[in-house]
Amino acid sequence: MNEKDQQYQPETLAIRAGSVQSQFHEHSEALFLTSSFTFDNAAQAARRFIGEEPGNIYARFTNPTVTMFEERLAAMEGAEQCVATASGMSAILACVMGVLKAGDHIVASRSLFGATVNLFNNIIKKFGVETTYVSATDVAEWQAAVRPNTKLFFLETPSNPLTEVSDIAAIAAVAKGCGALLVVDNCFCTPILQKPLELGADIVIHSATKYLDGQGRVLGGAVLGSRKNMEGVYGFLRTAGPTMSAFNAWIFLKGMETLKIRMDAHSAGALELARWLEAQPGVARVFYPGLPSHPQHELAMRQQKTGGGIVSFEVKGGKDAAWRVIDNTKMISITANLGDTRTTITHPASTTHARITPEARAAAGITDGLIRIAVGLEAVVDIQNDLARGLVA
Ligand SMILES: *Cc1c(COP(=O)(O)O)cnc(C)c1O
Image: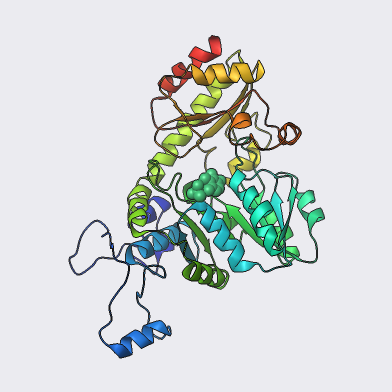
């Protein structure tokens, strides 16, 4: 299964795309734990090193298990090429290092993963790349922020933790108009729910650590796009070294096989929980793209297959009430991770968003009463009962 991958449905690609058998005809993908590869003779080594003959040389460049992961995810996203990385953050780093140079400018959504903001503000900036932040949802702000040196647009949708939905097609049109590349961090949806390249994005980023693994085991990431755009990304990675380990690629290959049924179950659970939360007297507001009360519900339902697995809600009574809900849970894991079979609960204002000023937090809509739930695969009634204890206390 290779050339005509696009004729298959995503759940089929998630199981079969990219799979290559070795001489032993193993049915499940092999884990090639080897850092280097040998050559038949000196001439072949020379041909491999100058790129005249394709083939593995050294695992910082390529490894067959990692290549299977890359081919599978590329088929699922409909990308020409996928470059696997050590983590989601190294995917973002490789993307920026691969396509930008000193003096370039980024326009980015204000609602980004915290470490991404840190990378842009404190690391990339040292190398002469500046970032302007704009609203995730107001397309006019993206247009207004464009400068002559703008080379990259960067967004994540739905956003964390407020599940704001950005209009990928509309923002892609603005990017195209000014000659910038649109990068979409597709971590929350995965290609099962949303395919940014089909909507006009140029590059897709993944933290494979989340739903692609799906069981909270290993770190990994990926950058996907055209061969042309991936050339610099791969070049950076091959030289600088934050590549994906073969072991982690093997975990992701196994994880992806169940991605479709997991995303369906996470989404169904999240919708049921969101509806239940909306009916609770202690809850002031629920943020979930699958609810008709969500400000971008219509766009979300056009752009994504479901509302996804993340639900946030604001309890009445501020931080004390929010902490009471969290501290009264007995089953749900108190952790900031997401995309796991286990449901997790976070208080963004005092954890993931604690380092920004209270004013900036308020401007971002992250109130003290806000709680984020990443809905796992347990029975929804058990999640509800776990939350109800603190809500009525
Ligand atoms: C977790 C996450 C990342 C970073 O991924 P790591 O694998 O932890 O490096 C980037 N973007 C989003 C949206 C994430 O949730």
